[in-house]
Length: 274
Picture 1 (spheres, one colour):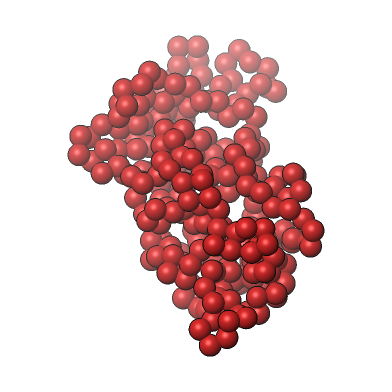
Picture 2 (cartoon, rainbow, N blue to C red):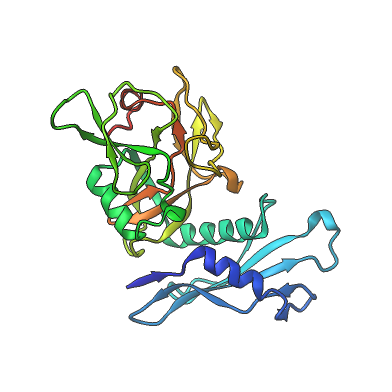
C-alpha cells in the first residue's frame, strides 16, 4: 500500500527544521522527511527543503526541494519554487503537491459534479472536517434529482456536512455553487482522505480563476455570469490558482466550492452535470 504524508503537516516540519543542516555552498536545509511510503517494501520518496540564499542577490532568494525516490529508483531531483507567491507554508505545500503530482503521474480525464453518495464518502474520508472540505455556509450542487420533483436538484453542505437541500435547477445565488469532481489516472494507490494540491486550474473565458481563500457565502468565492465559458486546464505554477482535491475512491473531490451564482442548468450546458 502507498501512504502519502499529510502535506500541510509535512510543510510545517520542513520549515521548522530548516537550518538543522547546511549544503556545501552554505544554504540552510532541513533533514529528509518521508513524502510517500510503500508500507509493504518500506521504500519511500523523501524530501529535504533548501533555502537558496548563499551568494545570491535578495531578489533571487527562494526555496528548492531535493527529492530522493527509492520507490521507482529514479535519479535524485531538485524542484525549485519558480517564483511562487504566498506564505512560506503555502509555497512549500505547493511544491510538495507538484512533486506528488509528478511522481503519481496524475492525469485528469473528465470533470463533473459529485453524486450525493460521493459527497457522503468525501465527508467520511475527512471525518467531516470543515477545514479540509469547506462545507460550512455554502452548498455544493450534486448530480442527483429530487425524487419528489424532477425540476429540483440535490445540494449538500451548508451548516452541517450531512445537510441537504433541493434548489430549483435554474437557481443562481451566493448560497450554492460549483464543486467539481475529477476523474483520471495516477491516484488509485493514494489513500482516501489524502489532500492532493495542484490538481488543475479553472479558466473563465480563457482567464485563470483564483481559488477562494474564504470559501463560504459572503466570502471571496468568485461569481459566474451568463455567457462565460468554463474550462479546466493543467495547474499554473502560481499557488493561488491551483485547485486542491481530496482523494475518495477512484475520484478526486475539490476541497471547496469554486464558483457561485451558477445554476445546475448552467453547469449542465457547460458539460459538467455528470
